[in-house]
Length: 353
Ligand code: SAM
Ligand code: SF4
Ligand code: SF4
Image (cartoon, rainbow, N blue to C red; front, side, top):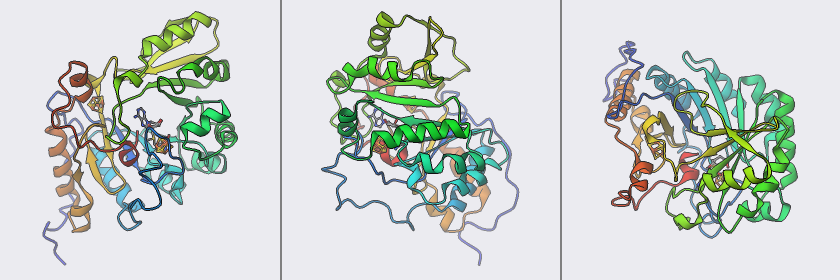
């Protein structure tokens, strides 16, 4: 049956260098495969909101693997070459290795990474790697058992996360990155403990400034610890020196220990925003395209796709959206100009980090 979108011409124009209004290409696609999570980190999914009455997406509402693969193929034609699988908690999505396998075979896809809380990683690391996963980032805000439980909302065991990290290393997903969000008055006093744990292991610990993503966490800037302050704290005990960026647009500012015990990263989204080189698009688990972490609306791709839109029509929608992109929320926040009209920001668990 002919859909309202007409039939697929089979001709999809190859124009990888579609640029947004600020001249930024699309290179990095973050795919949220699951809106649910087995943690309740208070800064992301506080238990009192995400309780048993909260209505998460149904499996029918979520994109199927074949829908994700189809859209990713089109994103790759727009220039996306790096993929990050995220959520919610991506390892809750059954059969994830099959998806990774399909994505890794797409033309133009050069690198596939995963961001996870790590609790289910030990069981899945080997299969994910065999399927084509290149890298993993494990989010871990504390290595103190009690603080870990507080920051995960009382869910999951620290030991399971540490086992997950070990299995990922054994599977060859090196160098593993560990992401720690630092919140003033919560885990800022535990920075040296985290550094001590990961220094000299070959893993890269990265400190993330606590951000005003979404609206449910009642963020205030006083809770953000600027990266410069964390660098200073660490430098006093373990001298550091800055490193050059690995590539243009690298999000983390890199430092190394002067004594050769490895590298640290700092994600300075609040104190030193990096919108100018932001080449990231996000696909939510129900198929919306978001062009900024702080967006309020996403472009629905699932609707047209399920209505029978052919590839070239979908690609036109996606290209049109990217070419109109003008997002630079963090820069505007820094200059005191963010805020107006931003009351309805999308939540982090929904579009992924
Ligand atoms: N559940 C997975 C995990 O935690 O790794 C993947 C999704 S989670 C939303 C991705 C990352 O976002 C995590 O590293 C988390 O710490 C980070 N994150 C969530 N809310 C944040 C906030 N308000 N500021 C900074 N980072 C945040
Ligand atoms: Fe779940 Fe990750 Fe959000 Fe924590 S940060 S609640 S692990 S999605
Ligand atoms: Fe990119 Fe938006 Fe973050 Fe700026 S605020 S770096 S445009 S996601």
